[in-house]
Image (cartoon, rainbow, N blue to C red; front, side):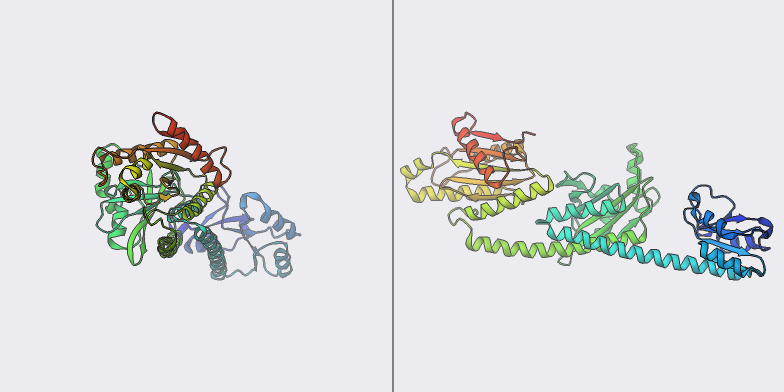
Length: 470
């Protein structure tokens, strides 16, 4: 709606008592003037009572409390000499009262002053709400243990705050034609989705220019001209209305985009909303930088004191800490993860046949393979002479089984220097997936996992899975 009709005034009372030229002055001042409150509540009520009205207080109280007016401020215009009546009107709840002769430019000025004051109050209230929301969001973000938790918290809180249809975080960099979606507000299960950036010109533009990109209407903006042709050729119905891409910088480099989209019928994103989201995104980037520094320090500490020297994998102490952290994270956020216990079959035979040094070298090669085959968030430790444990976040029972089968194939293709191409060691594995009805503490995972491992040693397929089966 154009600014000319931004504020709506409902005229009430006796029309013959209104000052001459009232409507003309109000319309000329940019107000929409009506005599009914149809639709949404008005911005102002302008009341001219009958000259013979004896008690204005009751009328004023009735008008300011009528539901259809929504608490709109009431201005009362009175006849000459009715100063006592003006006092009664103000005490009964009128916002302002003017006594004839009414100077219409003064009336308009009073309305403008009220609009300005109301705008300032609303902006101050919104600033306070934004400050409180920022504090609340970053309290939660700061308590997140890992980068993926930070991303997920960020998109969830911003999506909720603005009522968005889509809010996500996409990792990418200048020159890349693919992006990795690591968090999605409307579908928290998505944690690692590859996307073609040609479908998202706003993301490409934000990364290229290193500036926020705000598209108010994707069906008209020139940036979407090419993709609109694709939509048309493919007969794709696109319900998206607006799009915002906010580049996020880590260590001074564009590392990703905070991505917002609204659909037709969603609340419009105002400039203040975009600025607020950008503030959150950039502050979250600082948290990510601190997380990277903290992780680097932690990795150095792990390497210095809690790494198994023979295999390069983490030690039993480090496994205990990581398993507790993963258990608490999964319990808090209702996530899945799996613990896989792996036993190297007949390692004692290798030691007896080729000697302890050869057996140690085989263990070292196995440790290197395990570390190479893990995803970035996974964790592997040596917790016994020939036993390894893998913590696999966002993995269910079938996923744990597939991981073991993939390891078997890798071992089959690998030539161990001390064994030769036909003497590949085999493995047995027990996998326990969380959540599980019998797992109330991190220790319960090991109890179930060792039971599954023992069962696997007696089974034909050499792997046993307990817990979530998908």
